[in-house]
Amino acid sequence: SESGKLARLWDVPGETAAGLHAACDGWAAIQVLLMRLGANVGPTLNPAHAEPVAEFLDREFLAKLPATERAFLLQAALPPFVSGALARDLTGVEQAAAILARLGREHFLISQHGQEHGAGSGNYQFHPILREFLLLRLERDYPADAVKAMKIQAARLLEEQGEVESAADLLTQAGAWDEMGRLICAHAGDWMG
Image (cartoon, rainbow, N blue to C red):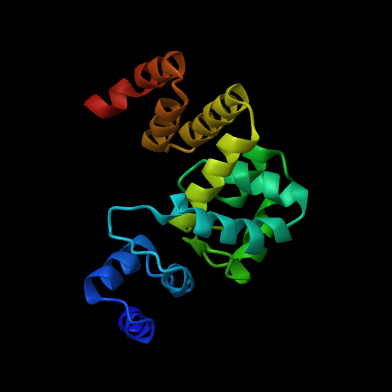
């Protein structure tokens, strides 16, 4: 396997290589980065919290984007997946689909799933390490009540798309219990029937 070859190249033990492969969701670039940094990552540790990885993502990814795209990505990472339309509605950025499509084509740890690969169709998913990094930056860069409001807005948009469980996860993260109560009451019949 590619991961095994990388592990042998970097002289990483098999068990550590398997943990890295799992933590990196199969992305060789992230695996090489972690091996280069000497990270001993097991399958239960999220390397997004490792400072060298965060510094690398800041320097090689986020800092190279215009400020408007950086702010866009921090918010677009809130849902576990995002379509161009959902990202536009969540962030107010009209070019959301085009930005996501471009970053996906440029292999910026964003992949498209679902419909034919074209701007505005299908769902985009951030690599788990990138998503965790972006969410940590969101928490760092914005006031807590602004982040809570963003999570509630994202949850409402997900609910409108029928993604009630994802909406509930965001409301739980936000501690938005009144909104969670409304969500449960609105969808209780769906869950019971």
